Image (cartoon, rainbow, N blue to C red; front, side, top):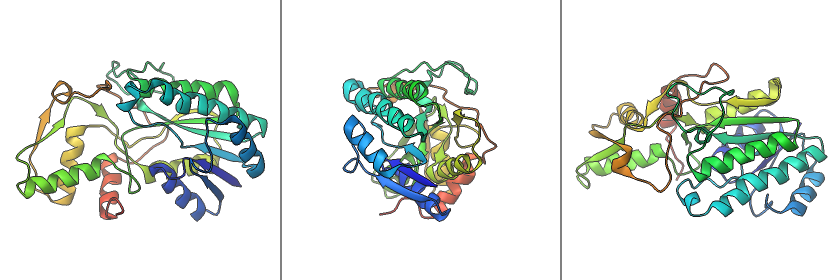
Length: 282
């Protein structure tokens, strides 16, 4: 089976490439330089040349705050780009796997979101990712939409490594306080865990549709940070704060916990393994 992955330089894509190659799939990774998903002619040409059985759409505009001032660019990549890829997949009868986000929800439900809940994005990033979902549904009948949340992994900048850096500064006396938001609740997810579950979808071929794949359980960013320091044995005092104390251009949902579509291990176990592996590569 041949699998083509867009956005091949991204944090999730790099884990996917390693895991799928280890499972003996023929994997073709395409970076932005190799494949501009917003260029219709280029997409059709590349997909027809490669003729993959599956296309995993990892390419995306993921700068949540910047999207507030760059809606057109975010929409061009996350919505229009997905529409182009979806139509090309349909043309060559490929299955499309689209990576989406918990930010398609507004966080006002305050109980775990299921795949049947109606999205209602709060910010432009979530809006354009949801538009991407609709583009996939409307243009490629053979699709899996995989919503995930709070990703971290060794191949990109992430919350875990930011906390470790700040924790070290705290212990060295470079900063006197470490405040972390405590009123946003979600599901921390290791990219390697997500990649392994996507590989299971490819292998098991469940019904086409929407799936939630995220770390089991829930946490606030503050609880997430405390668990990081606990596992690392770092005596760092984490001070809870509110979203209002740490204002960002893009609104975040206060509660974006999703009900996983599969029985997934607790997020703490994935975090412990990530930290045991050494975290981010230099």
